[in-house]
Length: 297
Image 1 (tube, rainbow, N blue to C red):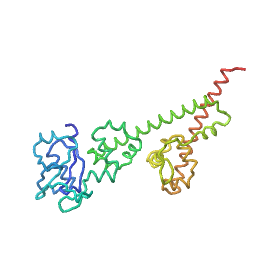
Image 2: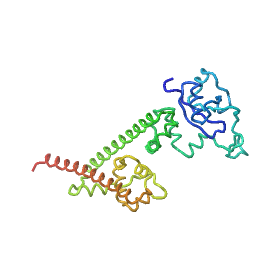
Image 3: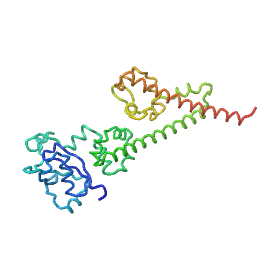
């Protein structure tokens, strides 16, 4: 199997759980044991985490579903089931009160479930929201590599591809907005004497946009602003207008940044907004000249 069989392994207490991609049961013992901190000289046994079934045969290992969870047992360690206490939500395994590592990861780190979706079907990326994609991009590549069972280089390449995909979507959105503004100008017969002011006045926050309950600011806009690569180029024209209109002091509180960093971001947003308004102005200028040429005096 090219790249190995994706699976997860944990220790007998279920306190440590990692993702791997291995071609054989022997490789699972070696790599899994290293990742879980087993003594290299100790004997390692593999069982199914769910019911303790012993896995020794390579053919049986290959027949198991992708992303099967295994438990590695060192000498004198034995498998035991998870037990529910008094119908509550606490789980006890052996002498410790534990929660399944997958559930803990998904609760504390939402990106873990997204990484699992990618590992099971890479095509699922086209169905993910932009906020989910940004979350995967922002995850430290070493952690994402562990969750996906990839090496670090492959993970960095994947994050770069996701960033490029987001950037292309934003470029398409900006082009669509520019065309919408152009046709709106044509249909409404806007005054072209001061196109920058008239265009800026139309840049309202879209209805139904998800808003942060604390700051009253669009949630997606906050996530994009906190992105790593030129966030101003990935904001819509409406978002840029909203950010610039709020000012440095308000944006400091919304983003939780210092004045220097916030000022630098707002300057970049203002520059980007001016550039787009100049594009709108150019379109309107071309429209005006076109009308003059078609109606000679």
